[in-house]
Image 1 (cartoon, rainbow, N blue to C red):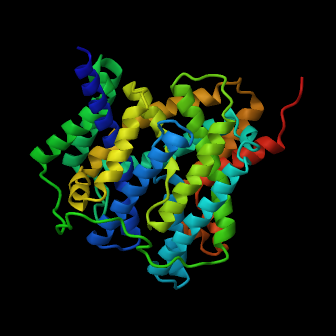
Image 2 (cartoon, helix red, strand yellow):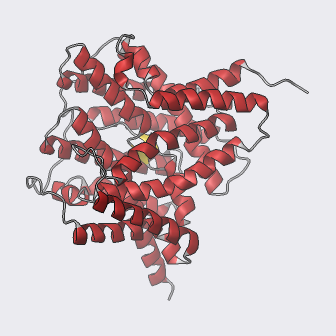
Image 3 (cartoon, rainbow, N blue to C red):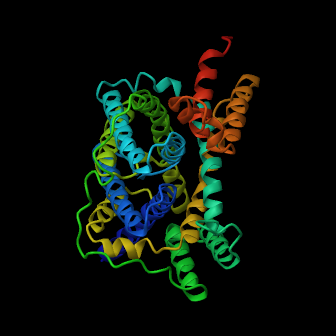
Length: 431
């Protein structure tokens, strides 16, 4: 008698995870495509390959990696690396196509270092570095870095649009408050499927009041994601130190995501060493796949914790189903084209709503221990410098060596590195 409701529940939760996976990944290939002057066919191919790696890596991590329902998606640090390398390449007279080939190498080497850290269990040795102060500061910087991107998307400030698109912005904010309202005040299935319902309502309203998105050239019915679509990887000596630094910072991202997810799931006083080692190793495999398939490298998205806190979905099985479904549909480009027609303002609004919970996780981590003068000073310095860097154009670092550019121009990377260094140098006095 109870089988049908369970099936319906699993189907709905899978659908909601699937939408969340898409919403987390659909905007970034469009942004990267614009930076590297790709045409619509090339952007569609990049989206196909990125979805493939997102689905496959998310499934592998949840099944045999860290074994948590954490979405692996393109975000934060890799957007900055792609953008900075594009700018510095152009300034050095390097064609954008060659920069993309160098980026393939960068992702592969980063994956190699991550895999070594995980297999040799070096990740657990640096685990004590990532204290609640570090993870809390990381979350705050992450919300600042991506909230601007989401807000621009909600306001329709994309492509050639330099002014607020009022109809799109109105529907996006309506979607944002629908998701928050349902998750906060509704009960039962309305609360559990707030993100799914919000996106569905927003999408329908967008079609009614604004119309469908522009149609792109019809794609082949079946297509396998292409290997090395950017060309054979190009090697540059600056790739190795940049990949090593990126790998270390990515471990902090992984630790923060694992800690946040365990907190959200109610797991307390747990030794995270095994999860971090497995997660680091399989994150390395994911980066290798991203390099080989000329996709955008994935990181564990801490906002996954916000999604679970928002929807109350604690089961892992629907997440696994959704990741497999995303991997499967990438072999059918017409489906990718249809799904990617979710209006960007609607997708950004749903993601912004989940970040409300992530802000709460940041504050919770910062206040796990009493905030004395030392902690406030360390967090303040890291937060202000990291956040301030996010508002600087990449061109201001053009005179610096390429490896320094990639560190200094990334506010998330710089701020996280600062809080780690300051906390290690400024030790707490023993009472």
